[in-house]
Length: 518
Image (cartoon, rainbow, N blue to C red; front, top):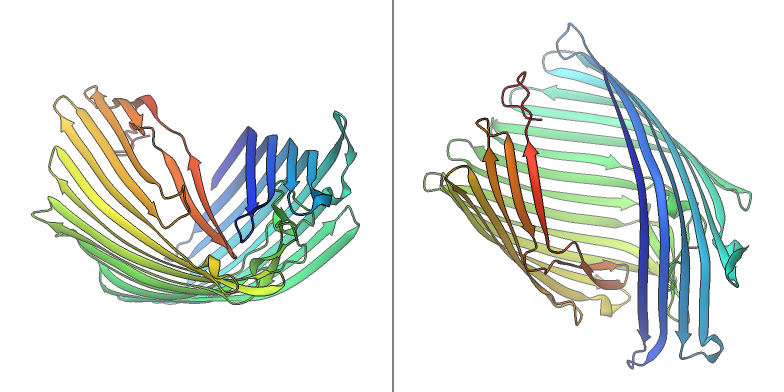
């Protein structure tokens, strides 16, 4: 019997300022917005679980049961101030928003499962399983407009009290055929989802009762103990989250306004995969490669409407036809009596997702490929490595050719570890990253260097003193590009920059387990 528990308390403050300018096709300023969003939040996240494992006298006969209870309570309060200036429509020349936002969220989840495995013969066994998950959510979001210096007028269009209860039950049967070189697993799960989404504010509710059959299969062939090929098929179904369901407008970003949709249904995915791996323990050479394909019906997508002043209003909907194809290959070569290792690798990924823009169906695609290699030289006292990784991306949209973009990132990296006499170690790592084909101001070239010095004390080497410098040149910027629907966004984020860290570590050895440290 295993019993575990967890408790997390959190408290945070957030202060965010955004300024945006909108330009016409002639590069003329048509609208500008500035947003101040200050908020504070606190909450708790707790859970407990129990697990029972029962082994019987008959080999491989086993019973496993588990139960869990978890909860989340969060509340937040903030002030949203928005200033908008319209240079096209004089009747909308200036608009201001000054609101107080209050949000309370509560979630309780119960789960239980049971699984019984029965060997029929030495080669065949069956597995019977059942699990249930019951979740209860409620969220109260309130908005109050300012009157003078007080926030006393409730804004009904931005206020909503919403509850949802969802019970998911699954019953499964698995057949396993296992011989010396071959393992075949075939099974299916019957799943029932009963959900009730209740809009307390409007006294409306939607009840859903959905049944699915989730089959899966996997075949593995072992050429040797260190070489195998596996092919698999599985199905999956995901639930919409609470934010997607709640029918309330979120205006925290005045240029991208979102609404919930309580009528969303679960998605259903088919997944196919092929994997091969090989390892030679004597030479320490290895190879692993694979390919994956998946397609999803009732996937979660966005229905976006762009209004006359350039704002986007987005609502989640279900769509069919999303799919993804990917493949990868990696090799590890050990040379010169294992002092030198070479690790080349490559992968590609192609994604096609549907969405709706101003009532028209749009298909957004992204194709990316990555090639990388690392070389490492290692002796008793020295470990030196260098590598390069290049990634290229191609995005497209069927209704907006401006979304047809190509961009790339190249990263050069190196590291050094040297062990001096008297148990002293020096370690350093450097990366140089270049971004290209992005918008002006986002084609970054960033050099980052980290270093540390470690000294071991005591005869048992249990005491360590470590001094490390993070981002020695103070150049730590996180850069990324996102493409969603027909919108491409470049983002630069300043992350935790240069700092010096001093650590003292003492390792307590568990004498009951040889070599075990805690």
